[in-house]
Structures are given as structure tokens and as C-alpha cells.
Image 1 (spheres, rainbow, N blue to C red):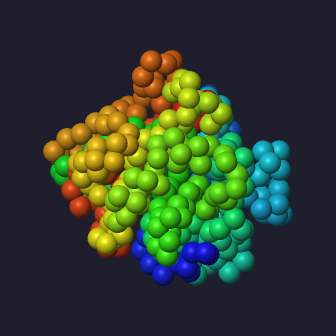
Image 2: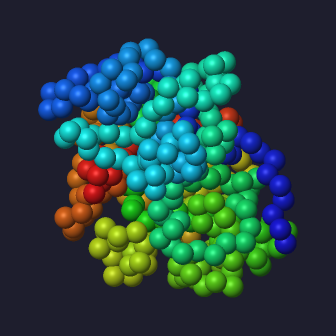
Image 3: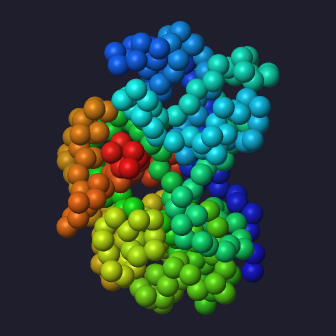
Length: 341
């Protein structure tokens, strides 16, 4: 049976790959007088000297943006129209900016407006590409949320939101997101999902191998109110930076259909214990969040346990009531060292 059309808009967390922003500052680069740093939100982009000035209104393109083969971005053809983290003149550059005047009918746009779809920008998803999945249905967003978390550099407001509140920071595994839920019309039918799709059950790929290895269908039949979301990692997924010898899985979200919310971390631990499922490890936890952006970049540095491989990042959530009616109090911080590698 095809899943119903999405009805609950607040479950969607859409990443603004292209948005209207203001240049917060312009800084010189000592090693190259012909280049400057443009500060945008929590990001910095290396630009040509005098090309931009403070307070300029621009379109900012986040890293992982896949640009269309269009005239306004023809200079990105060398990079296959993909926006990456790079170093220029020895300085980190994350993203790309264009003057708002580059685009027609953008003069009435407001700061923060999402223009991703308008400019035909998509996400370059190495995670999805690396698993070679064959999919057949859209993700059932009406039943559980997408798994992507906003980057704090793009949403620095989260620092203020979290300030002084109890929080939990869990390890971000360098793997591939997957979600599991029973078909609401037939509890014998397990929907196995990648980040964006329901995966074809005829293709016994890694997503289905995880479902079978951890007996997820049988466990959800005992706890039918829940959807299970987590990260699979191991050989053949990304670069297997955790050094696993077999496929593994760690739950990072349990969504309650009846309560229409993601469970808090301690609740998640209890459910995973009852269901005999592994869950994400805590990297940091406290009663009062006090981190600055620089603090977070220092905290995220480190290797995956037992390896010399830089860990990808940390996901932060409020310890209590992180999942509201119209928002999710969570964000991720990705290591710049990881991105450069």
C-alpha cells in the first residue's frame, strides 16, 4: 500500500541550502591581500577583495549544496556544481555567496527567506550515494519526522535557545540514516526508510540487513506506537571511520505516534533497553548549556574511540521537552577537521 500524503507539516525539518542573508563582517587575510573573509551567520566564506562589503544582502549557499547547471553559477563547473568546505589562502571557506542583484525579482526578499527550491538547489547527499539504494516510495513524513538536524552555524539562534538549560550531546556516527515504522494499515508490513525514501523490500541492501539483524519488525510489533530512527555504520558505508568489522546500528530517535513527539533521551534509553536495541553514546551532558560557537568547535574535536579517525560531530538536544508542537530543540555541530578530510 502506498503511504498517505503528508498531512503534518511541523514534522518536516528542511535545510535552507540557499537563503537570503546579510554579510555580518568583512575581514582581511594576511596571507593573501587579494582575498577577504565574509562572515555569514556562523560561517565564513573567502571572497575576492572589495567584491563584498559589510551589510551587503546576498544569497548564501551552504556546503553540500548541489547547484543547477545555470549561467549564474557557471564558475562552479570545475567543482561539478557542488559547494564544499575548502581552504583558500590557508583559510577555511564554507559555502558560497552571490549578490542578491544576481537574481531577478529577489529585491523584495527578506533576510532568512529560503530560496532553495526557487533556485533549483538540491542537497548533495554522499550518504545516500554511498549505499547504492533503490527506492520506490516517498518518506512517510505524516508518520515520523525526517532525520536531518540543522547545523548550528546556519541557525545560531539555538545557542540562545539552549542557554542555561539541561542538555544532552550525543555522538554523530559517520554512517547512513535509516528509519523503521510499521505500515499503519498492516502491522505485518515493515517500512524500511533511507533518509528520504521508503526502500524497496525486494532489494536486500544494507537497510534491510539492519532490519533483519536487529529483528526490528518483531520488536516494533511489540511496541507499535513507536518509529525507530538511527544510524547504520560499518563496512561499505561511507569510509567506515569507526573501524567496524560488521554492520552496526545506533538509535538516535524514538518517535511516538500517539504523542506526536520524539522521546527525550532518558525515555529513549528506556525504550531501547526494553527493545534490546543499541543507542547513541553521550559525549557531553549538563544542567546548564553555556557554550559559544568557538566552544563547540573545540568540543567536537576528537577521534572515534579506538581509531585515529576524526569523528564527524555531535548532536545536541534539550534534555527535556526537546520536541515541541512546531519546533525541534536540536542541532548538530560538525567538525571542520572532518569536513576538510
